[in-house]
Amino acid sequence: MSVGHGFHATLTARPGKGDEVVEFLLGAPSLTNDDCVVFLVGRSAANPDVVHVTEGWRSAEAHSAFFAGEQAQALVAKLQTLLDGESTYLDELPVGGKAAF
Image (cartoon, rainbow, N blue to C red; front, side, top):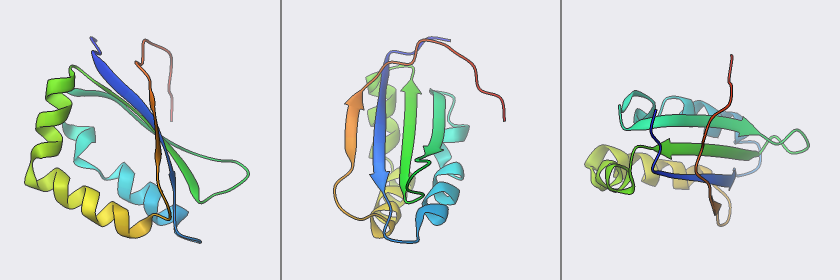
């Protein structure tokens, strides 16, 4: 696996919408895109309306191309209706680890 681009985002759902945001993200088309090699969704233990997303893509170009498409633009527009305030994004390049669900 080669990850050339990635980030960690923290999203705050509108009050009581944390479950809906998590469900929405877990159905995102990024999960089935071959260029998206890491896509993890987590939650704050203290506040269930705070959702964390870690993404790793083969390249910044692949990420940009995916999000330039109509399907991804519709996803972002819908997600924005579920969020409260500005999301934060941190530069992160996933390098390895383990996930078992």
